Image (cartoon, rainbow, N blue to C red):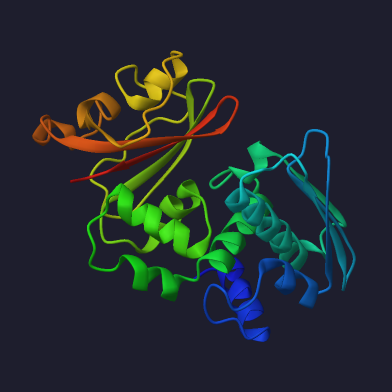
Length: 255
């Protein structure tokens, strides 16, 4: 567990939170000295103005999806608890909120904090341990924690039972990838084009996104991976989620 996740646990323990429904995220924020307001923010999803012991967090009133609103609030709280000694102001867009593996360590830490604050690992394990990875499992887990499917998939890669890879693509280029240690394929060059004959490829070619997972040939995503020679006929499940006008999260997992 990294320092961002540890800090999230400390906060939950300090307010006596034990399970979803005990306290709202807004109550947790207020207990720490963060005032929340909702108003239009041009070009941002959330922003925070803070000093050593208090903060004003503004959430964009244009966010209509409650799980996203909760994640933005948790992300800003991450800045408050982790980064207030480094600066007094952070402003976050769809782009920064999707930065799970970039050079921006502060955004990555805020995302890790938000994930653990919303989905504590010990409770997450209780939800998924020993169960087959499929869309109903992720939906049920997301509903339990009040999180988005994307955030739930990203959490699963750390502590789920099935091999999984999460890929972020923007403007038809692969920007980052993260996977569980046991995912069989790893060679996927950053800044390479999204493979054409995939669900993600369909999206960037203007064909929309499938709502349910689709079976795809592993070789389409990983034609140059050293493991593909012995796994040419492997299939993977692919599920995609649009996270910005030009950004896409792709989840790949084995059968």
